[in-house]
Amino acid sequence: MIAAMWQSVKPEWPEKTDIRGIGVAEFINNWLAEEGEFAVEAKNKLATTWGSIKQTR
Image (cartoon, rainbow, N blue to C red):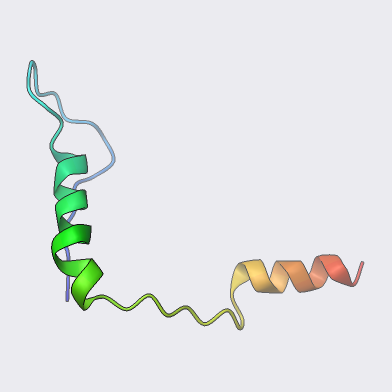
């Protein structure tokens, strides 16, 4: 599944609501919450590796 989101540069929409946040919230509520998987394997991730390095120093 590919989800197209907006770029980080804010477009110029004079007197209109910035719809990027609304679109992302709809994606999370309507698809990701039901279909997505939030399983994260911590092994070999940067934060886990960095934590191990800090513990041994």
